Image (cartoon, rainbow, N blue to C red; front, side, top):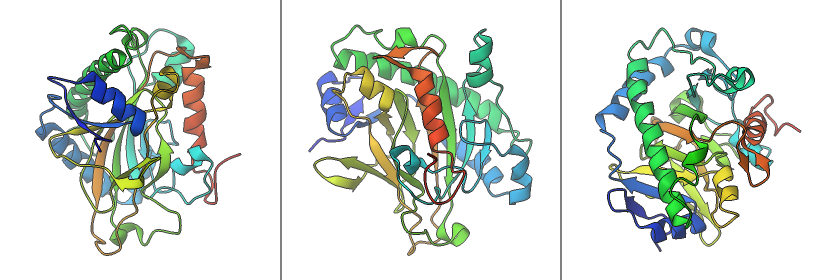
Length: 304
């Protein structure tokens, strides 16, 4: 049905992009220029951190929106939809935009220094290369989306001169590590992302990504090892005046019949300049509210 098509970025088709974002809010993209050895090296370096005992990771613990380690029980993405659920079965190393832009308030909230665990000395140079590539790719995607929406090519990128972004290395341990999922518990609960575009380098597994569409409900997301998965978030859906849908998705719990299955995803959340007005909504007031909403400060449901 071409609901989630593969778009070759060397010869993109704006009409297919528009159709996909109206249907599911998701694309696969090839021709992105990312050397696969780079995400592989990032996974190897981050895996060494995630497999440390809990006390060794605790000095880096932060809440959602912080820069450091999101440990077990820190996040529940279903809360953004108002769903009462147990917290997500994952851990994350979380990084965000820098350097500062000179506005004291914005710098304190959105451009603080990143935290680099001493136990992963090889990670900073790898991420410097990867995040530079993600920023350039995200700007390219924003230009393509502008064309697909029949707007000037800089319609979105003019609001991304010093944008905020978030980057998570998500580790999804196996059932042999975290135990059986509780009722309604996922590796990541159902939600839509909050920003403009999300660029995901993921691994294929039985307990992997699913995408929701009105026509077909929940289905496994298509996978191509040569492709990156791209979805739009709430701000982009709003920016399109509702023409496009923010991609609703979830990550299934660890499969009971493959208890050792563990996966790791590299997730780049692109946003826009602080203070950008998106159809009457302050972008970063909205982003902060959503980040606060998915903070799992208790186990039985969303904060109210």
